Amino acid sequence: MLSADFLNLGKDVAMVNANADLFHLDIMDGVFVPNISYGFPVVEAISKEAVRPLDVHLMIVHPEKYVRRFAEAGAAMISFHAEAAEDPAAVLGLVRSCGAAAGLAFNPDYPLEKVRPLLKSCDFVLVMSVFAGFGGQKFIEETYGRLQTIREWIAEDSCRCLIEVDGGVSPANSRALSEAGADILVAGSAVFRAENPAEVISSMKSL
Ligand code: ZN
Image 1 (cartoon, protein in one colour):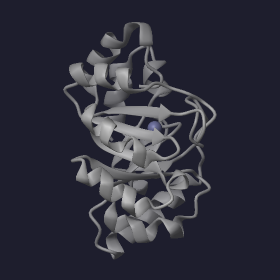
Image 2 (tube, helix red, strand yellow):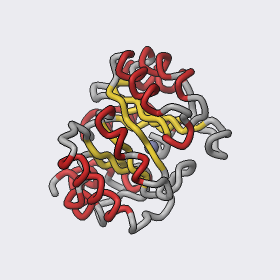
Image 3 (spheres, helix red, strand yellow):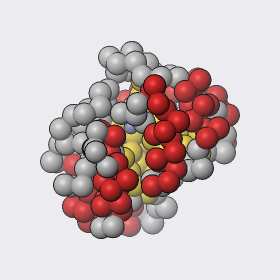
């Protein structure tokens, strides 16, 4: 929703309700990432109108301080950055204890070996295919290999963990991402900057 038209948010919420599977909300604090996005009033407003689950992606320091409030604001899925958490396993447990699905997000340069032991505690991982902080960045091609590695580990370790990809996702790479192991594709500017957003979403879903 970072790419939505905030003066016509109701229109974009209705479009997502009608076409997509979930709302992805990027929360930026100006500390973990240089940018600032939006906070609780916007999340609560979307939650009131949403018929699809809210997937809140926290790009903030001290995520543990805000997990409960985002769950209360209507988040069904909450991810936070491994780079921003002192004890990611504890934060994953906190998210679950608030009744939301727990996701671990990490940037394209985060060592995957540090992710593996946490997979069993995750409902999903959010693999960043650009660096967190801004919409509209170019997709990083190394993401495919990282997805394949994570998919293999999930199978080998018998984890029940979905893989979400975020950053530069569009109809041009959605099929390849899905084949590499992505279960959930997050698209922002590719959808909202399109002349026909519904058509773009439908082309990414009919892989
Ligand atoms: Zn995101």
